[in-house]
Length: 395
Image: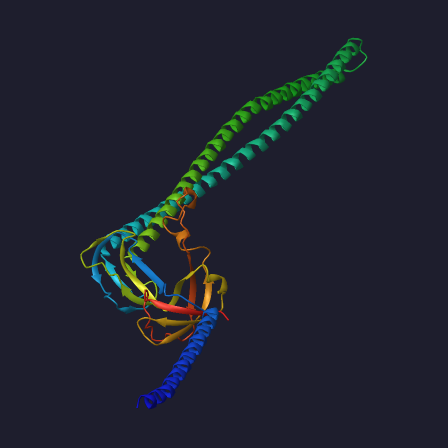
């Protein structure tokens, strides 16, 4: 019995041993194949779970100070660019716009009057200039008359001298009875006529000379009038320039009033969903105060922080498979758009300072921007901030 049992157990143990060895070999081959597959996968796929969806969030703020009288936007409401979100009390700004328009109207009237005064002053200058030119022309004529009177006086003096000599000669000849009385009397008459003409020429010369100072005084007076009127023109030109500056200033004030009146209606800066709403009716808002935000979901992207040891394999344009934690097995397609110029810590609020001596080497993360392929999210189901796992195909 004992010998038969031992003989029967030996073949059974051998069979079990062979099966165990076979299973071990199969498991070993599977582990090797799995390890090789994993190594091959890691060689051609670079993945990280330090990634999230990013997008454009437009912060909406007021440009003016005032009281909110109407809020038209609701939380998570979809709005289009230009849709009204809220209204600030427009009445004070309408009053300011009306006052600015009235001030501009008055300024334009003042400018028109100043320009009319300037045109009138310029006309006066032209008239004074013509009067001065006329006086100078008359002075030239009087100066020519003085020269002519001087020449006539010289001629009359020469005729008088000649007539006097003739009269003396005739008197001597008449005393010797060499000429007739008629000839003698004619010589005497000729002398008297020449003396009268000489006196007349001298008087005309005196009057002509006397007119020169009077005319020169008139010219000086008209030159003074012209200078005065020119100074008036300069003053009125300055007034026109001042009025023009006032008009430009009032135009700027009116434009600003119109802008502020228009800014009472706050509109959506882009298509998107209303979020971070923190404004209600009756609230007093100030310029720059954040009121709400509009998140644009039509143009989102992935911001993935890859280890610096993996970043050397990543290049712009490489395909990316994206898994979103919210949608378990669903994959989205994308492409690497760009790689940030530095690590995330280098651009943080407090960048590391390794020169202090307290240096601990840490594997750095470099942000990579990944764009979704066209048509991957037509329903805009992806939300900003969702966690994702992007895998870059680096083969």
